[in-house]
Image 1 (spheres, rainbow, N blue to C red):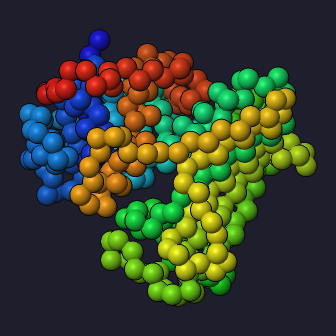
Image 2 (cartoon, rainbow, N blue to C red):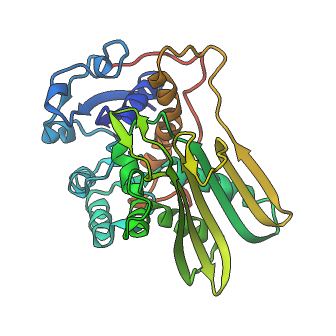
Image 3 (tube, rainbow, N blue to C red):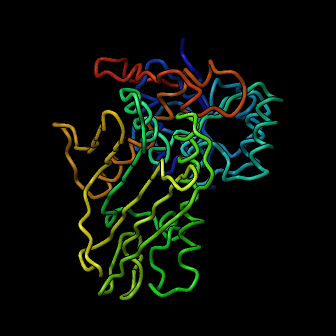
Length: 356
């Protein structure tokens, strides 16, 4: 079966999604939503730095819905609930990399999305990497222990070259270290990690009594010039260590931690690994690490080449999930609801191109 796909936006993650769709013989891109006027009327391949695909980007949502695709690959930075309701209500499935894992962060709007799924007979799945895919990895790992006492996930990255102030400022980066409401800013900005705690608890069959957020900061001791014409001034936040924890009574059973740093002039000085550490404490205790390297044939000419390589791990879990999501019953699906997601159509000898 070939799945007909509409790509929703062609930003950083959207570009990697288009690359993956265009090179996968099981997927066919038939439409593309352009969020900015300068992208309207241009070929999707041209927008994404590959050969033309014969599909023209448009801002006409009704025209895209009329294509009746099997799935929309929805890659905006933040989810627009009104858009999702239109898509799902029209009976079109959605896989998304936006801040949506279980949907609980949306409050009452989650119910509107669920109703749209019911109305249209469609499914929405939020993939993510962390939160999202890394929690799936932890859940699978826990399956080899006959007793699980605690699951710990640590993400650690130096994000100095990552050009995305729009996603990092809401976490607390760039604010004065003594800003009175700094912790509240970070808690709100990292709220999607609460959904990750819920996901793991659901997989364990555990009812949590509390979910709490803890955070520590490091400041830069000199002005820090960053990509995107962004400067973090001396005395402002350039390191964040945030922990979201789930408790049963007073016992901590889930801990999801993110440690992100920028530059080499931090106070206090933190050492930053690169990747993920997943620990399942129990019988036996199992510790796994995930790190990422370029393929042997990778040639980078700019920093953006490295950044785009990293964005692959954000784009691909959603793409891989498309067949399972299309086959799933209507509603909000999580990793706990879907079968094993199989990376079909990605081997190097696959048919390399498709068009609308």
